[in-house]
Image 1: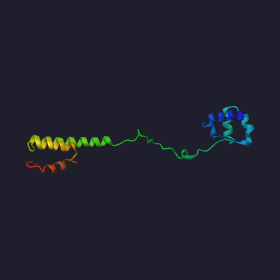
Image 2 (image 1 turned 45 degrees about the horizontal axis):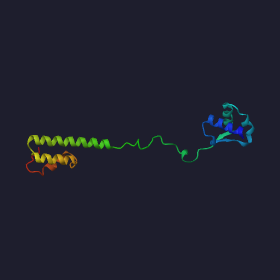
Image 3 (image 1 turned 120 degrees about the vertical axis):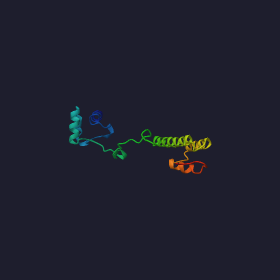
Image 4 (image 1 turned 180 degrees about the vertical axis):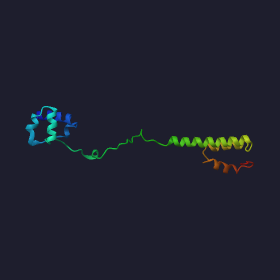
Length: 140
């Protein structure tokens, strides 16, 4: 039995699988005992005297090519932040321009700035619609 164990170790190294996966044909044990070299093991494998057990279970299913670990999931946080920055800058620029033209006073300006920061307006047209509520604001 000791001789077969050494052959099994050699076969597992040559064939690149674990020792538990190697199966010897019980009727050809004398030929396996004579195998000394790696080439002998390869010949016995090609002859079908030494075989490898099939893979069982989920490993049989083809492995995913893409990894989906926690470090690989790309969230869209940066896109939301970029959209927010673009909108806020646009609205602040517009409100500043209105103040410089004298169309809104300081109190309205500060109120609008707070509302812009709180994401009250979804776009510039929404801001203009809101400005019609204030008295004395003349839009273009």
